[in-house]
Image 1 (cartoon, rainbow, N blue to C red):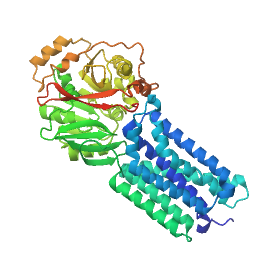
Image 2 (tube, one colour; image 1 turned 90 degrees about the vertical axis):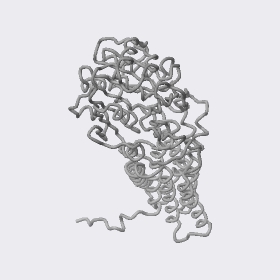
Image 3 (cartoon, rainbow, N blue to C red; image 1 turned 135 degrees about the vertical axis):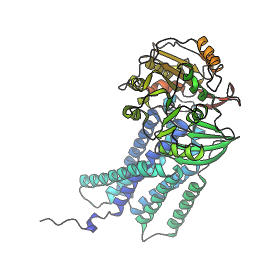
Image 4 (cartoon, rainbow, N blue to C red; image 1 turned 90 degrees about the horizontal axis):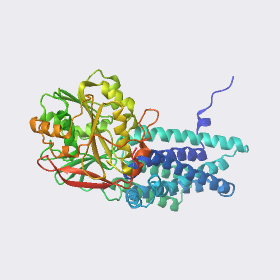
Length: 532
């Protein structure tokens, strides 16, 4: 009977340890790249395709170069130097990564390839260095059978990649900041280098190890050097879904998700509409007589729900927000409190609508962002689901970020066309009134009767809905050219390509004045990445 393997036989040799750690670090850095790149370039399929391509190319080049040099140069000290060099580059990534991203974001490149230079410069070199490890380790394995040596090495490296992928995805990113995660991978590389050298650690190796460790710790403590969001950052974290930051500036508290403003609150008047597009959320009160229950798909800073609760004492508001950290932040920094009239569900919006038996007078779809649009919330099938959850006189409002016309309007017009397949009447209200990328509020009703702009203005004068929408109603539209855009379906919703023309365009967010009636100023940001 065969004896079970002993603990000593399961112990990794030094070259095997190097391969395992290189797998952990390379896959961990690849996933981390998505979080570092997203605030500047978005997290579209083009960004992720570029990340995967750059990492594979850098590893392949490292494998090739390392394989050619392994017979003559492979040694534990050389492996150690590779890990020290990797740690040194990761330290630079922590310290200067954000500044480099901001510097490279303005390169005049086609939008789909805009993130390539940044990904290559930031993550190509350390991945290339880690590529040397496997062929060096195969040479140092002592096995005479080349196939067995390479197979064993790649198996160990793959196991390390699996560990790195799961640890980074399910533990590190939801728990730590990008700088702290970089610190972990940097220190792991330094410790591995020392393990490869022991017990013959010379003074030079000790000095380099200490110097790199100081750089890593310094970068993690300072958070790196970059052009930070204007204002005082009162909270910053990485969630399982995005980078989250709360910033106070000029009496306004703003929630940034992946570097983009998502919600804002006046610290002195918490129920004032800071971003003018949120005032359009009251539009349904002009389309239907009675509103008792409202659903918001997408919470953010809970601007809309908070104002609804304040202005309409008979309305119950349900909010579905997929990111639990966003909900926690809204409660801690935006004064959100659950009550009999405010119910918060931490789940996916489509999943909630599929499972709930509740029906609503109004559904507000506020889950789209300029760089992240979940395609499953854009399709005919989803629109049919919203219609099923609305009362007979119910109203759907979708906050769409796009241009109202021109090449950058493709997503808006495709969504308009898609909603028109389900709802007999679809209206839209651009919030800025020009052809720039902006918030466009699309209103869909189950009532087939057309409501004209004049009738809406008359209802605005007659009905006391807590806000004057006369200015907002002037952008009324009820017909769009849609022959050149597709109907979005679950089996084909090319949201990335539809939004790609918006890259490089100005995204204008109108801010409301103190009386909440008109857009008085605009705050512009440059779209640097294709939305998803």
